[in-house]
Amino acid sequence: MIDERLGKWRIFKELGRGGMGRVYLAQEEGTGRQAALKILAGELAQDIGFLQRFQREIETLGQLSHPNIVRFYESGHENGHYFYAMEYVEGQSLDETLLAQKRLPWREVLDIAVQLCPALRHVHDHGVIHRDLKPSNIIRTASGQVKLMDFGIAKIFASTHLTATGGVVGTAEFVSPEQASGKPVTKRSDLYSLGVVLYTLLVGRPPFEGTGVLDLLHKHRYAQFDKPQKIVPEIPYEIDDIVCQLLEKDPAKRPPDCLVLYKQLDSLRKRLDRRLQNTEATGRSDATVAEQRTDLEEPSGLPGPATLMSKLMREEIARQKLGSPLSQFINHPAVLVTLLAIVVGLMVWGFWPLDQDTLYERGARLMESSRLSDMNQAWREYLEPLERRFPNHSYQEQVEKFRIKWETAKNPQPSEAQHFYQLGERMRQEGNERGAKEIWSNMAAAFDGNDADRDWVQRAQKGLADLEKKAARGDRLKALKPVMDRAAALQQQGKADEAEKIWTALETLYRNDLSAGDLLAEIRKQRGK
Image 1 (cartoon, one colour):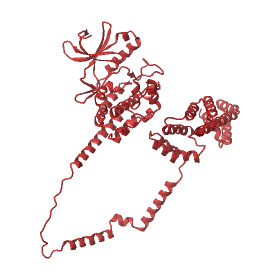
Image 2: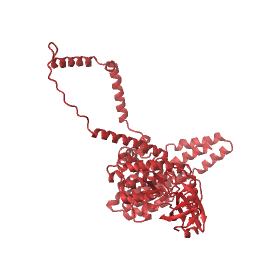
Image 3: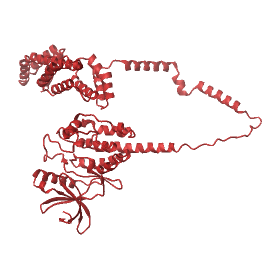
Image 4: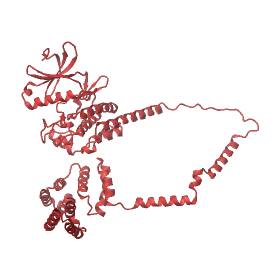
């Protein structure tokens, strides 16, 4: 293609090649303007899917205009070649920078992040998700300006084209957990990928490395990573915290959007700059104050230093005894009694046993963290007391999810018995009680008698017993269906008072029966119709 012409562009040299085609340096005839000319590979142009993907990149770039995104010039089709021209940026991709430097100083990474956030926000504001953020798709000029490029697999929020249910689109090292699961992506998916990019720049490697694509996808969904600061101790903890927040498995725990993230990063950069300035000012050392001595004698008749010091001390003691108006008020007996009563009340309040709602809420807040120390505190101080003091509490399903998260964090490589117990628990939570029963029954039979797995076998047996109880309760309450149907029929006939008598009678009979929650919920539902 060298020295050939496509449209008004004359090609000079190849800049690179990728999965969809090649990129050339070209010059516009007449103006001399340079551009990067991307040409779809000939064999791919015959594939309608790849052609649509190429057209999608053109459509996406055409919507965007931002100083931190490569500019789109035009597109065309000539001599069987599909192409588009975009801004030619002289610089290095961050992938090339990493290859040369291994990793970047945290200040440079922070500057890159601050520039990328407005670019990503512009992308998202136009209804586009990039879906393939990685160092090779980010270029930095000699002046330090960062440009985002390559929207080959970007997705329009509302579009239904080019979707593949259950498909994974993106580069394995940088995809979000939801992409790895084949689930729909959102703006927060790009934020996860941005977190992987920042981690890679700070540390010199991605947070997860694997033997293949499937291994990497599994790790993005389930594995824990070493914090950047653990590998590079000089990284400020504030940057470490932000990167870890971006890498949360649950999208809801990541920053809500790029604007919020930008404000966090910009505020952090200013704060760290001030901290550095203060450190440098202190490092220059305080000005040395020369010791000044005077050999002049005191004028005759004036008090000497000892006399003056004694007088000053007596005046200070007298002033302290008198006290300020505030201290005189506080020292009044009535005020002291009131303050004592407040302190005692606060102590009693502080030691008063927490109710089940408060225990759950405080434990749940701590369990949102990815730190094992926070999870340990959640169980020691809140969730274990909740289980012990309120065995029939209403948060059992969520607490069991927290338990699995805690146990996985304590032991990222679970035993086989633990793995099968947790698999059964996930099935139970998803409503597949038959599958859970089968898994737990076989697990208990296989591992019973093995001391190392005793706890998991007992928990599986308890789960089986709970399922049996639930089934028995369901059978018992099925007998009430005709009664509930009669109440519903009376309500439809306009006989609300008679229906209400049935509902009230059932509520009175079953209000203290912990197994009748579904019945009472159905009564409330019928009343609301």
